[in-house]
Length: 201
Image (cartoon, rainbow, N blue to C red; front, side, top):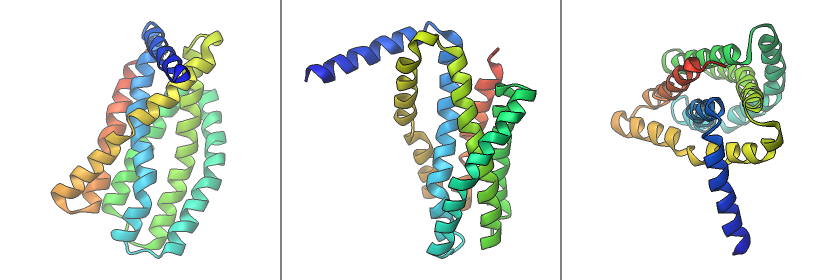
């Protein structure tokens, strides 16, 4: 009980402290939106493939395994891009790709090969978006408080993970279309991108 109380007190203190770090706090808000879009796409991709495209379980599993493998190389590629330009510009570029992937899924995704192609592109951009976001956040927080702030980073990420689920489910319920539901997630990437673009990092 004492440990739980202590943890909540520390969390409240961290929230109070991070709000003083304007750039870190505003970046975190932008991140929470577009990362929720990322998590929703990953979560619902298999459902989309099964229900909308009628793909077999073996196809879905192999695509998921490919994503895990290719994402590693995606983080390396985007790290090189960030070295040439900046982490912020690279993240914004990755968000544009996410939006294009969702438009592709809505308009052009019909076969197993289409699904594999999309999974490959998503894998590349997934690794880059996540790695660069953590890197950018680490540059905005005090060095002596990295552990404390990154713990809050992880907790905040889980705390907003319902937004993408709600958006997808609401669109599906209203239209009875998995294509419209997956396209609705564009809003999270656009909103996160706008908030990120406004930041002077």
